[in-house]
Image (cartoon, rainbow, N blue to C red):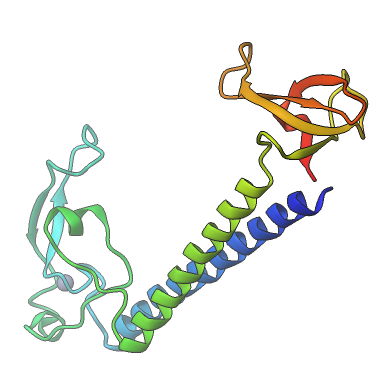
Length: 195
Ligand SMILES: [Zn+2]
């Protein structure tokens, strides 16, 4: 594997790690909100919304025909239904969205900052990956080495003089390169590595 190809793999690893860290934190925030809601003894039936879905048709997955009513537990559990009643901010479902109910998974400045940093880390890693891929992509003037395929001997090196669409395989590219000895070869771009 060439250094440039290794760099691509390396940056892909960073992207995966950054996403994983972000998703882990997002899950942690949802868990925190759920714990807070449980600790505050919120209403589990309406999740503190004060309303519940009374009917929905399976004909529409979006839930746009759903009908709503007041929470049946509102009277027996009045404490969990006042103006300052605990609200479950751990999850936003389609009915919340349809009714304009805004779930605030992020609630503190520290959480907001942490989340922004983790999101930035994902963006940075993706940029690095993009640069690495660009640097490792065959282009006119770059030196490539054959690492795959049968028609051109593996290990053959040369300077790219042409890159173009593969007429027989849509979305694939081919490269033409010339060895030091002056031999010209054509092969799928995926068969070479920029060195
Ligand atoms: Zn309720």
